[in-house]
Length: 515
Image (tube, rainbow, N blue to C red):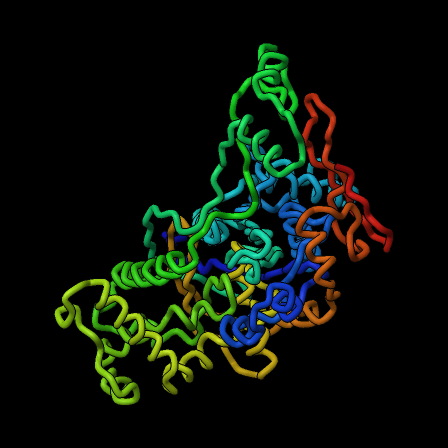
């Protein structure tokens, strides 16, 4: 009997929704008094994609999926699941994917009927930036174990940091949708994946708890209000049982979920570096490879999660050196470096060794051999990231699209080439996996029109950016045309409080979001 475990399963097509506005990193560097070359040459940042007033994780996801369905002439009733990876969830209970499904159902129901998505399973997967890769792995297994199954995987996020924080210049926004099928036209994935997970707090979005009297004290200290009496407020309001407002609630504390994270940049970089190394080691064991084999030698391209464009090239030097040692030619690298690898027994304290080893790895990135490796296997995936910023869960798929689009433009043949993926999510987890490029990759990649989309965006001023960031705007900067949009958020008390309503806008007319 034929075993479906050996069935070719993977990505058949990809569609992206890229927001239509962006901020130049140079403009941000001027506003923040940061040397532009440090951001551009040091981190690879050029422009930052921004979600407009009418956009959120749900609208971007729905727009990407709509494109994918239409360009493949799919009947929605044949789609068995739509799994969304996101860390920009809109609700603590209802999945963001269900909001996207509602938009899609309204859009496609005139053609396919009002229940065209009735039997489609939708869910959110959340593990920071690796959530969409989790959704991909899950969906690949699901397609592989059935017959003629179709799944759609989405990464959709708005990467937002506090103004003037050290993460601000890495912001970005966008959504990418993947069509997962048997006998895919673009990429077929291998079954064995490597994974490494350690629970850490390198980057997270906690539910913050603040006492109400602390809020009043802060208001008073800021000079916004005077003679505020928390005890009076408590006696006047807190004894009732039917509270529904912000102050008028039963709890002494206010629980706040902010979209901006708590993060430790250097620690997160270290976690990224360690997890991808550990996941690669697990991948090698899972696939029965020799521990002395340089696994990445047979991978034509390397695709990474890129929180900023140059993250991979800055983090990969340790694996690069380890692979050279396995290959037995690291002496050539040592000769170019003009220094030997520091060993822990040479130091009295581990901290001194770690500092010396870190400098050694940085020196490797300056070598011509490493630069050649980056140019061949990684750099093409950086280019779109440089123009978009961090897309969180969609970042790794943007790197894939960027790589394929540039290879197509350069007329490079990639059929049957194997590529390796290094996914990462803070918290923290990494997955390493591989895929083979299929014969129809040129036709599929040509449809991306990735860099054409990027060229057709509209630049905004710094002042517009800040107003957008502070949520002071009620009307979109760029007119909405041919896409889903956020129409309103119910502010009335009752069973619909906070409910989000969406619409479809085919023509160029201004959209005002009602809060």
